[in-house]
Figure (cartoon, rainbow, N blue to C red):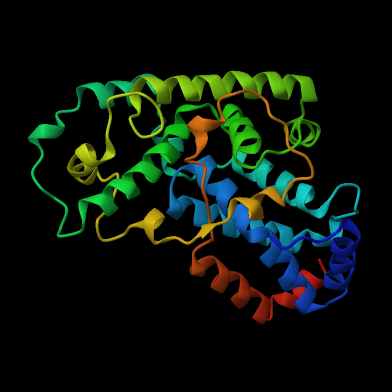
Amino acid sequence: MNKKTNAQLQALVEKATSGDKEALEMLISGVQDIVFNLSLRMLGSFADAEDAAQDILLKVLTHLSSFRGDSSFTTWVFSIAVNHLKNYKKHMFARFPLSFEYYGDDIENARIQDVPDLTQNVEKDILAEELKMSCTSVMLQCLDTESRCIFILGTMFKIDSRIAGDLLQMTPEAYRQRLSRVRKKVAGFLARYCGEYGSGACRCKDRVNYAIQNHRINPQQLDYTSAKEISVQTMLDVKNAMEDIDGLSQYFTFCKTYQPPERIRHLIQKLLDSAQFSVIQNS
């Protein structure tokens, strides 16, 4: 996300709501990365994140005239995204909820040695990396929706506690306490089970075939390893202040960020190029 002052963003919003298509495109391109990555971590899969991100960006487009500048534009977008995702019921894990107990039992007791080679001539190291990124994203689905949102805002985006508290309708103190507790919970799980980010015995490379058998990864569709990562500094530009809540940061290096798939960009561009653009202008 390119750095822009609040005044510059406010000017872009005014131009966009007045019918300036280029300004509207700049606003949307500036927030689509954070919207997609928030959706990905909240929902756990690329497919669900794509659908939700498209919905959120459409909401941003159609409600742009309601932005009054009482907060930063990015905070306003976060508010729309958080509210949408907290109530989002169409994703896979809403239908098949997970728990840390279930996840841990699967790690300890799955008969991974009984599964044949299913790699389909894809290098095992690549599949292991795909599984690592997928597994840690799915692991967050073991948290309840609000705890997951708190973790993502505080650990991945490092949102200031005052802003995060406002987004989640709680005091900054309550947010910090909840964030500390949920970080310890996730770190404890990783330390016990994960050999990649903690001190556990689980190794992704050993579980590749088991993961393929259970449709957790697909050798012919590697979402994470084919996605282009976004630099850490780019995501740090989203916030105005960073708080060092506790000493567990080393456990959370899996919170990588990615550029949205081209399908999202094409859909938004198609919408802006369509006759519906006039409806957005006047909404």
